[in-house]
Image 1: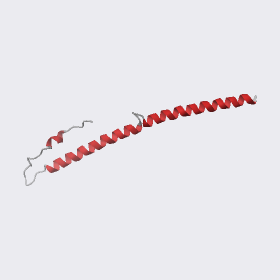
Image 2: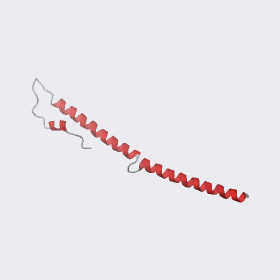
Image 3: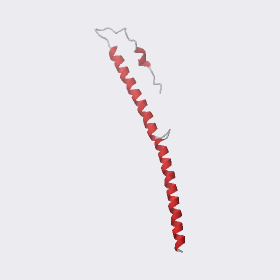
Image 4: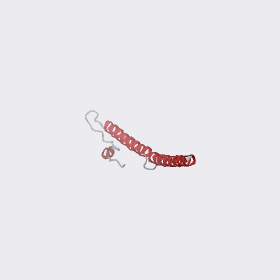
Length: 88
């Protein structure tokens, strides 16, 4: 009777280890995979940085084209960028 109890305990231990391995594999894939949390965070950072740079460029262009002595500057080679829409 003591032998049967050890076998059940060993089977329970093996099943528990297998379940833990499966859970860890799934969580690692969700964290690091192609569509994982870290990848999505990196993509969001890139989009945010692009939007920030675009906004700063717009501010710079507007500042460069501000009127001086009551006249607008005619040399605005990058003025078309003010209408640029996000490509991402």
